[in-house]
Structures are given as C-alpha cells and as structure tokens.
Image (tube, rainbow, N blue to C red; front, side, top):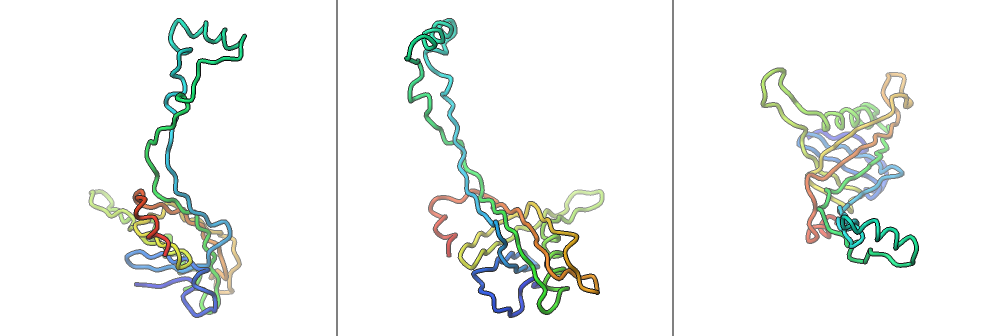
Length: 192
C-alpha cells in the first residue's frame, strides 16, 4: 500500500481530513469547502392526469366547468406519490492538498494516485481488462462508506509550483458514488 497526501504529521485534526483507499493506494487530503453528500429517493406522481375531467369526451366539458366555476375534478388522490427506487449515495468532495515536507508525495503523488484510482486497465484488442477498483472513503473519521466508485477527478493545472515543477498546493475535486443503495438499517452504521 502506498500513501500520498497529508500523511506526515502536520498538526491538523483527522476530523478535518478525508481518506480515500483503494487496493494499492491511500490518499489523505484536507476536506475542502463545499464538500457535500447526497442520498436521494426517487418519487413520482403517476396519477396527476387521472381524474374524471381527463376522460375522453368529458374533458372539454370538465375544463369548461372548471374555467367558469371554482370546482375541479382533481382530488388529493391525483397527487399521491409513488416510490420508484433510490440512488446510491453520492459525494462531491473537494480535497485540498498542501506541501509541507515533500511536494512530490503530498500533492503530485496524491493527484497521480487519484487519477490511477479512477482509471481502468484495459487490453489493447482482446476482452478481459479490469474496471477501476472500488475504494472506501472516510470523511473526517466520522463517515465511512465502503464500495465507492470515483466517477470524476479534476484538479487545477495552473496551481503554484516549486522550482522543480511539483505543485505546492492544489484542490482536487472528486465525484464519488456508492456502488449500491444503502438500506435504512445500514445508514446508522455509516456514521462512526
């Protein structure tokens, strides 16, 4: 296992850091401003158009009646929401990297490791390559999500550099997603 990012003693609380771990790399960075987590359920309202006024042949009469009176053929049942499923948790994580002792390890190495984590290992012609590894993310030592995929890695190309060309600091923005929905019984276990 290779370690990159804020791995040296820096006096910063681990509660202010995020840890991304795959099969062969661990990257530690400072949680950046705007970091967010989203857990979403998908609900639809499939009965919106199902009312007495929408029946063929009656709809014109119902629309005329509604436009000239204060009554409607729509009822509360038409607004009933139906659950269609849930999405896996998604995380937008700005990760601040800063060189204190070794820019090659603390900033450049961390960026290289994150770019490797998001990348597959494909063969030139034949099938049988490898998709990107699943990783785990630990945010502030208080939220742990295993089986996470990195969907996007972006960083600034014009960040300040040393005279050797290594980044002095950079912010890497990660878009992460869980591999699957978390059950209600599992959610409390994510918060450690």
